[in-house]
Image (tube, rainbow, N blue to C red; front, top):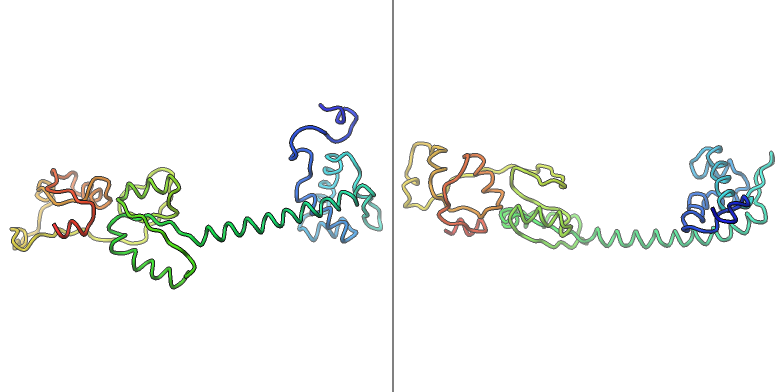
Length: 248
């Protein structure tokens, strides 16, 4: 305990947070000075009069001086209260300037959108989505990073992207998700392949046991196919984009 505390006054040591009233208290004091009424100040700030009285008493204990004289005719500042109010006005003005600056930073951040997307979505869906976003939010600058679903999750978890789009069955811990669309996986062959002339359905077991041209490990598309078939044969080729798979 400091010497001043032993004498019944406010503490003279410790952090500013313990020695300086909070902004809510300072705003209340300014309202009392302007309105000449503790009840009116409470109503303006949306708090009860007992809560306002308690806040004033707390500031008085914190500062070690009386701030407000209360009477049936209203409330008026003491000489010390008037001096503290003058200082409080400058603190609140500085806080308002701080808030304006912080809002400007938020606005600047909100105008930049970092998107990560799996290769299939980046190649086939995102161009149309980004054009629609451009029409609604022309001031938003978008940066896009394309990779497989695993890479997209890693970028989100490391705060290198604001939003990600993937195909897949699972969501890594620490991320929220929402389903926005469904797609369908089909088997595609070259015209000369025996399956191209096939008339009976292709059994899941036969598909699972056949070496296929597949996306790389970490791809959501491959993850879904693997889970649906209960396993896959060793790939004929692994490629990192749907466009490459189609060309092969």
